[in-house]
Length: 223
Image (cartoon, rainbow, N blue to C red; front, top):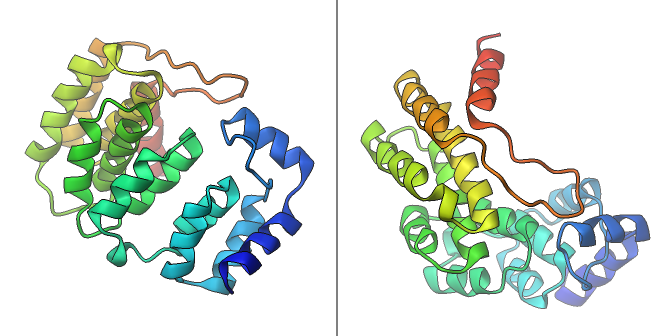
């Protein structure tokens, strides 16, 4: 499937109801409104197609970017491309997709460090998104690696930009469910931070209370 065929397919699958919903979540005007069920079906059909993924992302269409994140080959994504894509982020949905993809690349942690230090809200948010994925999936890293991020979160979260606060809170949760030692440290940090206020706009989304979420998640794992 070439880029035009992919865009035509996405357009045919979109609905007005989804377009309205996605726009409330920041998708902008260039959106077809394709359901995630249809995106998953396309992913199964296309499998990994990195060249198409690059073209889809660079088209700028919201749904195309969502599909790009699903079919890209993380091993072929270099730092320059990731940084260019981060500069073009426009919503938290795109930010989540790019952060999750970047976390699978060979240079995830280096990218995370660059992005976390950014003054751009979406780029920094994507950096913290990578940290959440690293905390949940990189089993070989020592606790000390994550403890320094807990200190940074506790120190900076109140003064950080809106969506950055949300992703820092998510990272705090991800670190807290990693193991019992980090759970204790994350819960202590969450208690000192208190409630994290994030403006989610005209949506039903909420930022979870970190301590409660950590405890509930660990209880579910035990069961």
